[in-house]
Length: 271
Image (cartoon, rainbow, N blue to C red; front, side, top):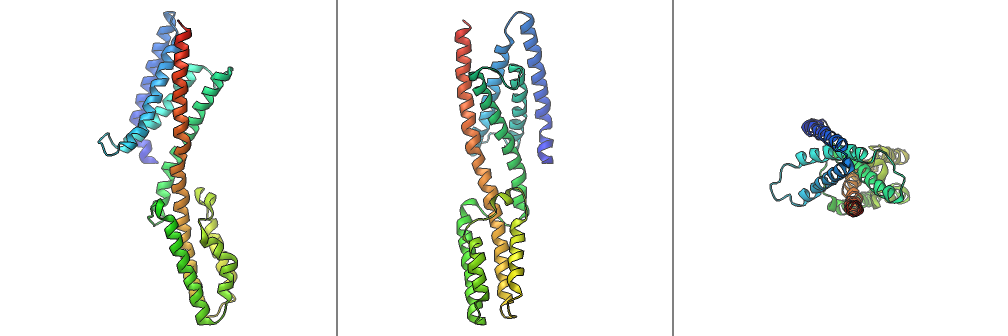
């Protein structure tokens, strides 16, 4: 986060200078009996096109188009500048006309999903690094399946050696649910410890009924459960990191498309 803030200094200063220049140009246009909204509208549209280039740059990562962190800083600073120019252009948070309200709703939705995305790509990668495990998103189902097989093997081995179904019964009644698929999705997203607390409670609930022979099997089962909790965290965070763009990009495309239509209407009816 501090690294991003440091990178935002120069783009932020540039944004302030550009906004001040736009303000001055709009004021001069008004003083000369022109329509400053034409100037601010085209400036806003140009900003939106520039912001859209960020996704294009990611698709052309093989080409040397600059560092991703630099593009991200420019994207963030450009987004803030776009909000300022939008408010300058409209003069209000929410206009009166239905058409203008639809266009404004698109703009604010794009802005809000952009802020959400910034929080996601700033917080989640560090959280996953701190987990101590590296796993790609596509490997999560196979990883969970492997952990479940190891857990079931521990339960079977415990029953065969101890001759008691205590751990097996407990696994079937409660822990089998946990090992079947990713769990505690929302809690992992907010950085909670619900998974760890649940695993600890399951161990405490059954340990008192186990013999000395069975206890080591429970310990290994709980270790597998803890490993799965880390995998679940990766699944939750990486899933959101991938899917927030499903909302942000289509909304951005719709906003640019409506903006083109808006510009055409303005220029047609201003003739």
